[in-house]
Image (cartoon, rainbow, N blue to C red; front, side, top):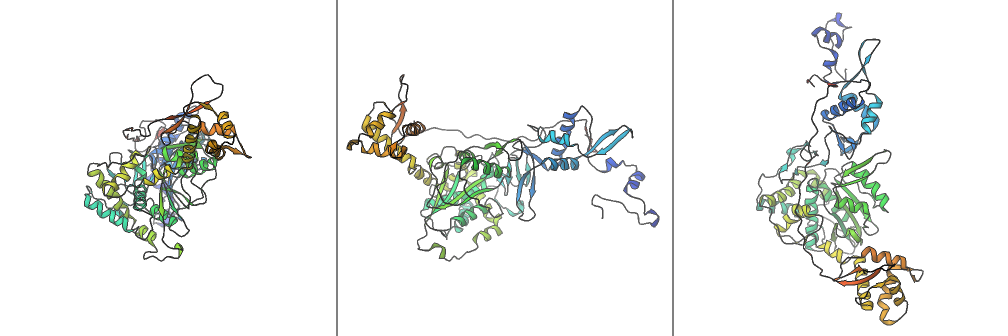
Length: 558
């Protein structure tokens, strides 16, 4: 066998003749027969040689740039999971060898001879801060996806207009070109049929589960999308299984949940490593504490990109955040800044031992994965029908930072008569512990000082007087800054400064004007409602740069 081709003559006297003899007989040079461009390494032409190597990697159609790294799309032979894999320096040498024939001039032979791609040139390409020819890979999509103009992209492979790489069989998905409202209702009924055995606490929670399905399907088309958290009171309520079901709409592979990071540094490393792979879903399973607002997680949910240093590589990567974030836990949920970034789906089985329940469809997720094209098509039909209908907008509260998501995932369900899935967000904001504490402090501060500015030490002095009329102020100050039974003034001042300007119940802290050496605060009454209109914008990614290079010679004429 000849893995790269060969030649064998059937005549016995040709036993010692090989493919080179055939090429010589037909008058073809061995270099031309390889059907690869030739890159000649010339001293003093480092930039042009490296540029030629990058150009040939781009022409191969298998290599891209993502976040400042050279990457390729690979499929795990065991799990069949498709992911983005960054190229290591040795792998880059191999890729360059496959993309072109490399030569240098041999003075003794007085001719050009074949060589392996020089490691030095490969290192220069690997460490480059920018790539002019490799196409930008924004992410992977496991189903047809919506382009910025609302049209449906049904072809697999790389799309230069969006920078997305489709990993799916288009024949499995059937979405009408111009779906009607009736077809959207039929698709919605199919999706609701999957949720009949989940014990949702309210219609809002059912709507949140449905909007999570639409989000899973449309996530590759959205710059931002909120997180979804499945919450229940007891084990066995179906939280993790609901996350599995939602995951099936984003990818044909089973999810791989991870534990929630303990601090922001751990969170940043985890997210950067995961997002480099362009996963469909990032899931935090069985939380034992509240969904804390790590800065990195907040950034990933409300920013299209996040940056960080890659472990083991002296480079900083900027990755796209287009992944669906899921989490689950008993009696825990989003707090602080996560309240506006996360939709909570409440499950409440009306039984003492939820884990002992029996179901008519015990293998629901397996059934969905078996007919995934049908269910994903139903979700896409709902979204496309809303677009074809002229994007009718129902009146609802604005969710800052998620306007595009609200349009493509929330509005279609409101259009079809469902409850608003985001009610849990506004409820969580109202129940945020920091908000409640701030409300108590504002009311107590105003009761003691009125509209007069006061410094932190003044408040501590009044609270320490142990007078009954200052009991509420004393209690809330201890809740905020208690330290060994005393009120830590520095901690209290930092807490007030961090929440200055935040409006709760029509009140807020503002810094008093003047030439005081220390900050003085006063409570100000303000209007609690503000309306701001933000026009959505669309972005597109251009294709690879074009241009010629004399150092890349191929049979195609370049």
